[in-house]
Each structure stands twice: as structure tokens, then as C-alpha cells.
Length: 311
Length: 273
Image (cartoon, rainbow over all chains, first blue to last red; front, side):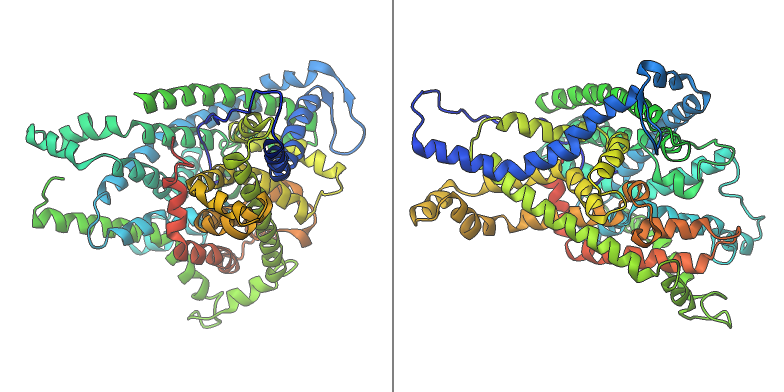
């Protein structure tokens, strides 16, 4: 997942002069505007809009990795019912729900723990979000060696404590939970930071009032803090859901989709379709389906986020 | 805020510190693993043999590091140029189609890029940029654009309008005002944008995995994952740990020094609503 993520669609309120006689100054500003925006226009059209159009076109073509492509109209979309893809879809949704719930709870716990500035909290915060600086693929490799290295892995400790070695990645459940552990480690601090931003915008008076009303810690959390934190929580959920639906690196590095293809995610399935089976057309068709799904999901979540903002 | 009693405060510190250790552990453990054990030194003590082996892995660790750095620098420079010019246009220079362009740029976030990597792969092939670090940097610039443009637009909007006017009064045109006066006022925004661009392109995995086909042009994450795949079923864990530590260190150092600019990315409104 790229670190930057979701921003609101802010409308830019600028009126161009309506009069026919546009002053030469306005004209020169417009020219300068176009000039300054031209790199943005170039990048957006060549690397974003053009591939988007191409994606739709590819979806309706038989498109091998090498060789000529030919239109086959809707045939690629039949792959939606491929059990491999469906299994991947089900697994991805399961992973998304579990990860999002655990990440949210951990991130909230961390944020509440280091919310107030006391001596030491800055250090704690840094320790919690430093994994965000490490790439997801590298994080996967850190954990891969922890889970599997015979000489310097976790099993050294497990053995020293007198237990049998644990196979961290060799059953579907173990592989899933080991990967979730990695993801929580990598992202909890990042989401904590989002929640901290929200927590800091809650004025102290609100807590004062709650205390005067005799509310305890738990009561304050449930009926004051969490409701006021809704925009930040919504943002965290959007990022976590989108990131998890598109999960790839963590499984590619840690489990390679195994054991027995039990941890193949949707993006992993797309990758295999395109670059292992060399069927770009079908991969494009499936991409289009995922794209439509996420677009709807994002729009729903955006709508919720906007409502939260104005509420 | 509620008052906290001394024992509760102590408990909080113990818990926070224990969690901090837990979060640092994978990094520290791996760092320790990379310099100790039989792979690190023949007698099983401390040594640098793992690092010596990973330096010679494949095309060579420094080749991979060079590729990664090249992509990261191209991305940073590209993002800074595109987003500072574009951000200024969005903040101060009304031009026809401005709103549409802004919304289309933000739409990059709505379209998860994993789904457009396949046409991008084909497109880069047509442009002769397959297996090219330049092509990869181009894609990374696009990915960073929504965040960066938003950030830079806000930075320029935060500058007082009088600054533009004064600069233009002094005889600078729009272009002169931008380069001689305004750009200086947005340095914190530029650092934040550059930092995010560097971290995300240095760490990017799926795009280079797809776009780079020749082992000599691999970036560090792709090269290290191929090292993890092992040869003949044997994974050289010591070399792997050494390699991941080397890949992570530049980002960790940048991150620690520029932490407040990283946090700015959250508080500036570019991330939140």
C-alpha cells in the first residue's frame, strides 16, 4: 500500500471571469496556470487515464503476454466463476475483516496509551510507528526469518523454553495468523498516528465536562471519545479495508500463497493469471471486476466519512 | 484530562515500554541474527561474513542498492517538480479545466493501482520502458501525485497572497515569483512530499516485480525476495537478514531524522478529511 492514501474530493471554488472581455492579466494567469499544470496533465493522462482505458480494452481481448491480441468480447469474464479466483476472493474478504478488526483495536489501544504528552511518550510513539518506515516486502522478510530460520528464528526461543518447535507457516490457519501478526506490526503505529491526530483535536473541556458529570474512564471512552473520533476511525477503516482487499506482498513473501493455495489473495490470483499463466486479457477482466467492487466500496465509505465530517 | 495516580502512571510506563520493545524486537532480533551465528563467523561468534556473502549475491548488493536509489531519486525529483508546479497552479492560477484535473488526479486514489499494473505493463512495453528504471519511476510519480499535489496546494494556499503580489510588483512575472520567492515558503511541504516519495519508491515491491525482468535491474526488495526463495531448497538466512537490514537502514535513518515532516503528512489535512 502506498503510504499516501485517501483524501476527500475537495471542490476548488474559483470562478473564471464571466465577462467576454477577458483582461490580458487574466489571460496571462490562465496561460501560466496551464503551463504550471502541464506536467500534472502529462503524468495523469499518460500513466493513469491511458492505462485505465487500455485496461477496459484488454478485458475484451484475448491478450497473451507475447504475440498478437484479438477481441474475444466477453469471454474473459467467464473466469469470474473460476474456483481459484472465487477461493481467493473469499480468503481475501476473510483476511480483510480479521485484519481490520484487530488493527483497529490495537491502534486505538496504542493511541490511548500514548495520547498524553508525558516524559517518554514521544519515544514510545516513535517505537510504535517506526515499522511504517520499513517496506512491506522487507517486513515480510524480517518475519520470514523469524518464523523459519533454524538458527536465529523464534523456534530457538520456543525450544529453549522447553516446548516443541512451532510450524509458524505450515498450516492454513498458522499461515494466516502469522501473516496477520506481521501486518499488525507493520501498520498498527501508522493507524495509531491517524487516531492520535483525531484525539488531539478533541478539546480538554470535553473531558472536563465528562468528569464533572461523574463519568468513569470506560464511560468517557464509549460515549465521548469514540463518537468524537469517528472521522479518524472512518479514515482508518477505509485505508485498512482497501489495503487488505489489495493485499499482495505480505502473502507473496511470507507464504507464497501456501500451504495448498490456502492464502492466495485476489491480487495474487491476478498476478498469477497475468504473469505465470500469461493470460493478460483474463487478468484485465478480473482487475476490472475488482476495480468496480472497490470503487463501490470506496464510494460507500467516502459517503460515510463525509457525513461524519459534517455531523 | 483525568489525574493519574503514581502507581497507575508507573503501570502505564511499564506497559508502554514493553510494547515499544515488542515493536522494535523484529528489527533488533534480525540485526543481531545478521552478525552472529555460524553464517556470520566460522566459530559461531560475531562476524560480518553474512554481509560479505550478501554483497556478492546475484548481480551484487550495491548494484541493487544503486538501482533502488536511482528509482527513488528520480521519483523524488519528479514528484517535487510536478507537484510544486501543479500545486501552485491549483492554489493561485485559475485555468480552464482546473477542477476536472484536480478531481481526476485525486481519482488515482480511488483506483487501486494493483488493478492498473497490467495495462501499465503493456503500455511501458509500447513506450520502450519495460525493464527500465525510468519507466518504474514514472509509475511511482503517478502513485505519489494525489498526496503530493494536495499537500503542495495546501502549502501554497497557506502563503500570504501579499507575497505573490509583492514579488510581482518587484517585476518578477508569475514564473519569477514562483521560483525566487514562493518556493522558499513551501520548503516544509516539499520535504514532506519528498520524504513520502522516497520511502514509498524505495520500498515498492509489486511494481518492480512486474516491470523489471532482468536480474541486473532489480531493486533491493525484489532482489531480497528472490534471495528468500533460495537455491536448491536452501535459504541462506544469514545473508537474507544482512540484506534486509541493509535495505531498511536508509529508510530508518531518514525516518528518524525527518520524523516531524512524516507526521506533517498526517496533520496537514492531506490525509484527514
